[in-house]
Length: 541
Image (cartoon, rainbow, N blue to C red; front, side, top):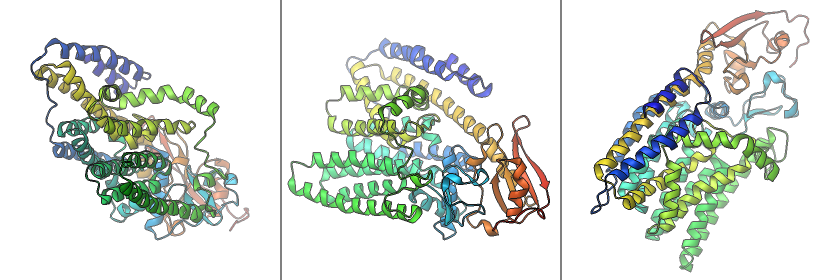
């Protein structure tokens, strides 16, 4: 354990690279071997050890005490470029628009967008400017913007999901399994970093978990209202993360129909309810396509690259294999380290050993494995930070499977209760250290964006501001413009070509400008002033 903490410290505080694989080897080598030996060393043949009793509300409250201030701190910087797009679309909705006015210099084709105007995940056309994302999450985020609390929703959704996890565990296994699953999730850095900031995963995963909980009630009571609740949640996921929503909808709908097959009346009614919510969900997606791309069947994801099909997905075996070869090992490494120790191993144990709750285990396994397999078709866009974020929306299922796996393992091993508690305490201590490491990593990665945001927000910086790439800072990932940029005190452009600063500043009616960059040596943002003459330049409308 001391070796593990030492390596963790070197990795995070001395910035010694390439230590993730060493951490994993230590975790699955000496630590796992020591825990198994400890559990086997003392047995209670008469009584199988029970899982520890967990007060899930207390765990959720403690999680909230950590995640709320961390999310407040996080939104001042940037962890993922998608956050900038979600944030800008939310600001557009807050202003009462569906898209912002096009910037001066917008082109007919998105492929011809000047580098100074190009922000990742944004679409700039002569008829408007907007990010490519679905409206579901930005609409929720826009409400948070109205109350000046853009940091709040994800922290709340992450906390609420812990209670939903407890509910699923209680209904499908036992109160102890539900409580343990909450602890396994709450002490996973992967769960923490996806419950802060402004990404859409916390909302989508909460909806997926709520749909699963509704299904658990529906299967046990047969009430159609619970099936309706499940389909409502699934329809909402399609407005937040369409591909994820499609995969989860197929799995849970298939489970609901298959398990209702012996009762034709219920089966027909479930089909009818699903058809109604499915029609509403598809209508929402089509309307979103038509509004932003001008075509019912062309997604803004495709419009962003001037195509008829989204470039994020590929079903070509060669492309998928190339992506797995290039990104797969790193993704697997980060996913294993970002979760509670041995989470995947314990979940697999539950799938193999479960006899009493086979139906429930297979539904949960199908959710997680289905999402992992589905996102193999996203080979050029892995997004890994303490785990693959595309898999997070079914992470609740993995935590529940692992908790059930712990219960089955202890029943078979029959270790003494004291030893079980000691082993659990050791793993929880390691995870608290991992959480501290994750918080440090979040702060370090976000620092350049946080410092630049603070520097350009001062009253003495106005007019055109060029954002310049620097170590740790990518300008096109950070759109700070207001939705109504015409009347904003600052207009932010990407500093793509320094020789063209005069031209671009003059296009917006300014002969002076500012350049914002980040200095990694001093850990400070730098603001430099510039000026030129517009009299010799042709003015563009």
